[in-house]
Amino acid sequence: MPEDIILELVDLKKHYPVLGGVLRREVNSVKALDGISIAIRRGECLGIVGESGCGKTTTSKAIIRLHDPTSGKILFHPNDREEPVDIASLSPRQLKKKNLRHRLQMVFQDPTTSMNPRMLVKNIIAEPIKEQEKLSPHDLEARVVELLNLVGLNKDHLFRYPHEFSGGQRQRIAVARAIATNPEFLVLDEPTSALDVSVQAQILNLLHSLRKKLGLTYLFVTHHLLVVKYISDRIAVMYLGKVVELAGTDSLFENTCHPYTWALLSGIPSTDIDETRERIILEGDVPSPLDPPSGCRFHTRCPFAIKVCSQIEPQLIDTGGDHLVACHRSHDTRALFHNHATKG
Image 1: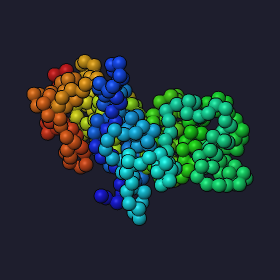
Image 2 (image 1 turned 120 degrees about the vertical axis):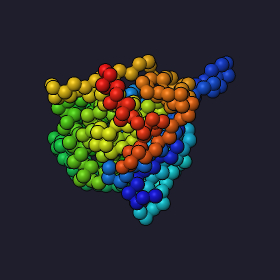
Image 3 (image 1 turned 90 degrees about the vertical axis):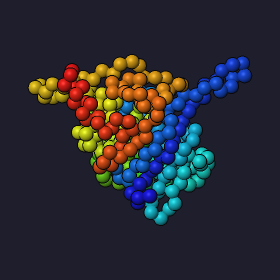
Image 4 (image 1 turned 45 degrees about the horizontal axis):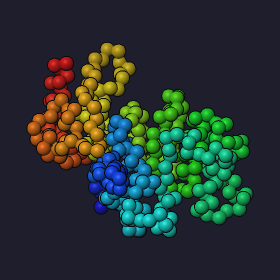
């Protein structure tokens, strides 16, 4: 295993049982996450994009064990001196005993609902610190002020409640709480989706600055392609519980290999008024995760599907330059895209 890997997902699955009958037995399951394998490098920002219901948030919550995985491994590599730990196999007590809770933190999509409205900002940020170490009241307040300064706030905000802040300020407070335990890995679940565009830019710049300053590793979950392009080093595209493409940000945008990614990127508006870009409209609805299609899960909506697509599930293969794609026609997708655009 390369030394720069901090977190590795190995065939990770999360199925939610569907109960039925008088005895309420499991009759089916929602396959929200159905076998993904990703290695996240230390210090990078890995973005995850896809339509609603593709498994983005399920992945993030499974990593920090808000949801217990159905199967698979979540290998956390703390540093070169320690053996990797399988987070998926640990009980809540073991997670706390091994000090893993403070090493992996999360910033949620809506800071309003993720904070106690009856607590002062001072106490919201101090709570995780008190769980980790014992500090005098003076030192604890000094630490909270230091964290507020890091996220662009100050001492004047200590004795206010969450509802007294704007959306952008609340998200800054959520970030301060997340970094209070000096984590190594931060999960960001659509942290800018509820904010105005100008405020989004401020929060993204803050996150970028903190990653460099504190040596953090990010998993950035979003459905906004331009946001993920700005902040991510690599991007994983998910569809119906599977990763269909994984590549460096520039490679993904310039050398798209999967038809689903191609369709997503075609919807990005252009600032060039002279550019003519064909909008790719996918036909049909996303299949149900209760009964996903056989073979490639995208074949029911793919304009380039052939017989093998419905029979055999494609595996992620390296097409060159660490660009992974799960598509039976990955060898000629560029020609397919060009011909389709020409006909359009």
